[in-house]
Length: 229
Image 1: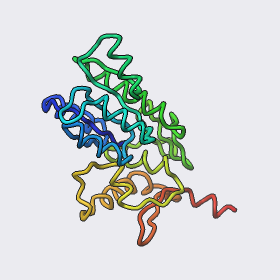
Image 2: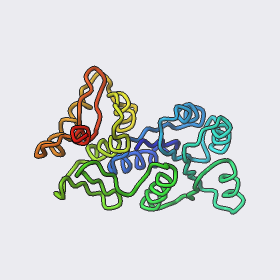
Image 3: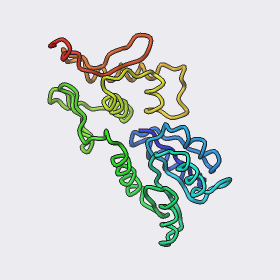
Image 4: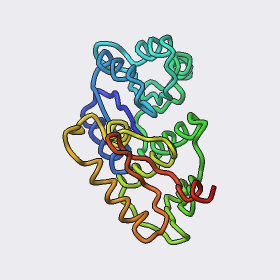
């Protein structure tokens, strides 16, 4: 999952980015409304954390412009303004949720998860392919009933592939959803993490699920179904 943070308080920005990255999200960030709107319009984000009071353009102004452009990415608005009138203004501008400062990070994280669940029609609590199961609420992965331990980045990579199972994904698509804008597209990090996943997911199975699409990228699918047909 890829998250955009638009927050001009450098200390809070740094904390949010670090904590989200620790949870396995790919987190990008910017510090003013004008640049933030350009980031928002790329439509590569699963959710946006948006501060109200920003230099250049305030959060409400850019959110209204963003919604007028037909963009539907969920937005969690952060602000120190806590009156009912302010909350109504933020929600009417197009925010999906509203969190007043100061706040506990655990609450922000829970609200973020709720927005992600609500936004995606494809989102499920359990993702399955053949005998591979990913239990999202429990944060567990099993293959043939045996639990597999993954790092946060391996988990994010597997989740993205399972949500797009059967679809060939380019290395750039994978990088855009699992890593952030600091990703070096000339590196082989995607191939490295695919290899890590294969060693944990496919190594002990007679039915490998992760396949290379030569000259293109990777796909996760159950080829045993095709053989049976």
